[in-house]
Length: 241
Image 1 (cartoon, rainbow, N blue to C red):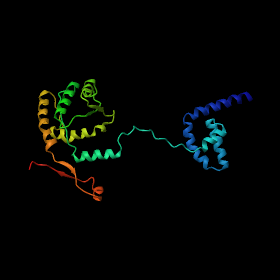
Image 2 (image 1 turned 90 degrees about the vertical axis):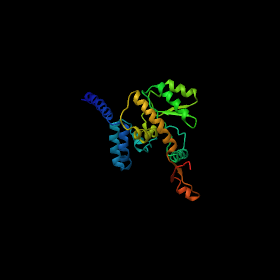
Image 3 (image 1 turned 90 degrees about the horizontal axis):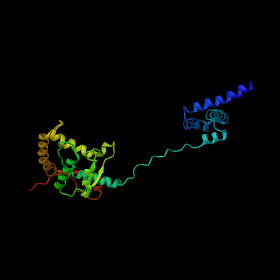
């Protein structure tokens, strides 16, 4: 009978090893360690006996594992921040104070890189300030050597939004609703005739949107009042008179 017993023991241990794969040792340790640390001497022995049988750990190693303090999960480091909260707040105040103005809409018959370059070049000539940067989404009409080469030749910084982060273009999407949809609606326009009509519409509306719309400005205040009303804004409209 002895040889059969010697064969049975390795089979039992092999079964235990297969069983532990269903629940990892780390998960098992987490589940048992708290109960082991708070148990009395008798129950600790019973818990330790069962734990060593299931895991195959040596008793001394099992004791060290069960009595060790649980490790605090480490947060994954994110991308290095270039701008701090102060810069962010300043940009938000400036954006709101300007009433989020300055939008240039361009109608293209197709989404093609050469036409995109022509559109960017045309916009840059109309702006009252130098065009220093272009930030696009990940459409192939923008991410190409033609547009990148144009920006490089003209000293324009070219950046793109992160893949699968559509909120990176939130301000652009907001203008689609606030300006384009209000002017044009939600219908899909195609063809050269529609493109020419949209160009005339955008050319006329840009003057109204960017030059004749009332803008927000910060209310004048001093001292302690500034801290409590720094986000209060009033609407002003300059006239020729």
